[in-house]
Image (cartoon, rainbow, N blue to C red; front, side, top):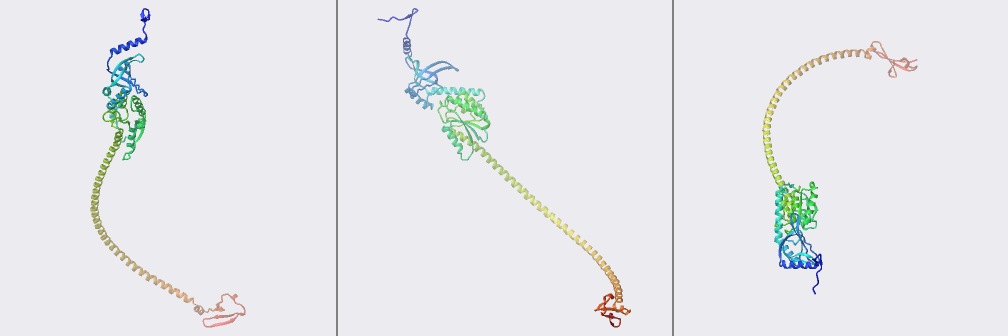
Length: 440
């Protein structure tokens, strides 16, 4: 017996399962095969426990989402797709990539409408990345900033380096070891600004670190952004317009070492210098010191050659001056010797003349002295004769002869009567004879 359908206002009422069943039937009859669908996968939504992925797919017009749909990738397809992506792009599936997928359209009463992805074409993703890359390059060139960082001046000795990298990465380790263990003992001062270097978060963290460095730009000579190699998908963040623009307009030279030779990003293109690996960045910085050392050596050699040339010239000048001085000295010596001979001859003549004059004066003085001495002797002789006469007159015999006598007491002349005492014997000497007497 057929169940009578419930109605409302003369309209039939259907259960939810009837509606979803009808939709499923229509979907199954209409979409009977797999279709190629292009979309942007904004989130992969991989469940680690099961390995299944439930991507969120969108289609945009500019920044506006016009269509959104859920998708499913079972673990077996996830593994196969990832293997293909790794071979072609160097990296597995990730968020925020454009995809061209082969999918069936299915409707589940429990989970709703979804795309069940069977396969994803890696080459399409690469093509979309390249399209975005070319768009960013064109925009930077239009703004006139594409070569701005390349036009900056890198110091002769870029010693103070701001490093944007991951401290635990091998690329950062290789960079530091190469700098610190260089064979020429060049000294570098590096400060690490840690940053995520892969995925969408790399854009914001690298930009934030560049802004931090810009606030201290007087402390650094340049900036290096270094990471290990990665596939093109892994490097897609370095094709981002905002990051590329930040690097292109940065006030310090930026040296990038974020990939391999086959995957040059826009960030590489707008950097002051782009090297393949972090080690090559280190060699580039060391080479700047080499270049300066070569300039110093060349300047030193040039200076030495110049000094040697000046020395030879000055030595020649000194030798010439010495030769000239010797000639002048010899000539002056000859002239002075002749003058001295003339002066000596003149002095001899003058000396002879003076000597003759002095000799005549001495002879004249000698004659005058001789005459004076004779006259003086005569005068002195007369004085002596007069004195002799006086002495003779004063001789005791002459005195006695004139009637005087000398009385002696004890052999001594008696000049005072008081000196004689009664009984003393006295002797009186006369001109002729002696008389002895006693004092009473």
